[in-house]
Length: 102
Image (cartoon, rainbow, N blue to C red; front, side, top):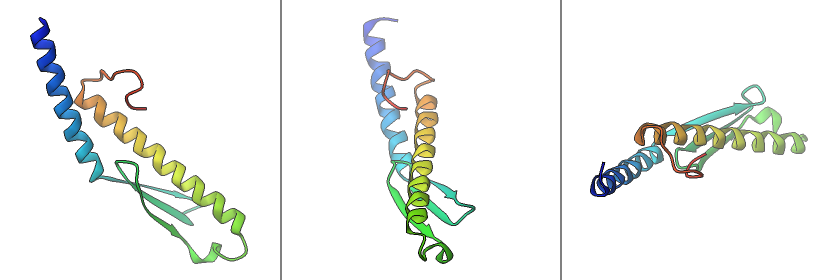
């Protein structure tokens, strides 16, 4: 493979990665914690779209509520990172530059 071919291939890979990132932004992941008491929905570009908290835990258990929300957000973001890594690996044939995506 000559340098011109490598540059062309890199450009194609960059275009495909941009397409995948756009597609990921339209996808969502959901995580529930506390036996379904808290549910968090995030987009594929790692934006938290919603946090749903069941009424029965919103009483005096503020610390528990905070811990559950944090756990739900962290779980949703972890699933986003997995989704991104899987889609980028597909787009790049499993070859990702170091540190590009978790």
